[in-house]
Image (tube, rainbow, N blue to C red; front, side, top):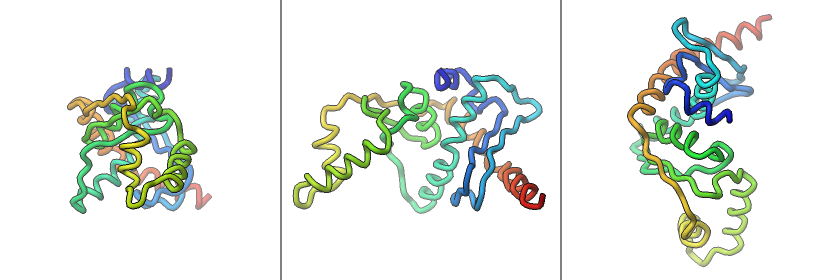
Length: 185
């Protein structure tokens, strides 16, 4: 219900900003973290906007990392979503597509989390053919014929994510200030 509510929120989180930092985040230069929720004066604090901002925030650092890769001439053609973020159909998938600027495919097994992925890696290590790459093993033996849905980013979602990320980057100083104030106290 929370993810479905996020789909009804404003594409940019409605002027809300969240930092879900419980510990450090090297991509943004944070050695420590504190959860922080901010609302712009014109922002609308509603449950759908809060949940949308939560999901946008969950992908903000990923997007910053993808931007670093783009500077290094690494292109993302498509992504395959995996884990609990994709259990609710389309919501997390559409937000990730907006963040990455690329189509995101989600298979029926997407809701299985990290332990399932680790089991796949262990199976690959035990069962791979000589010279078989992980990509080939997954594509040809694990996911061959697995039903999947693919969503391309919409322009509205991309614009919303871009606006959110601009605020997110710009307000990192507030996160730093929260840490400094607490550490002085």
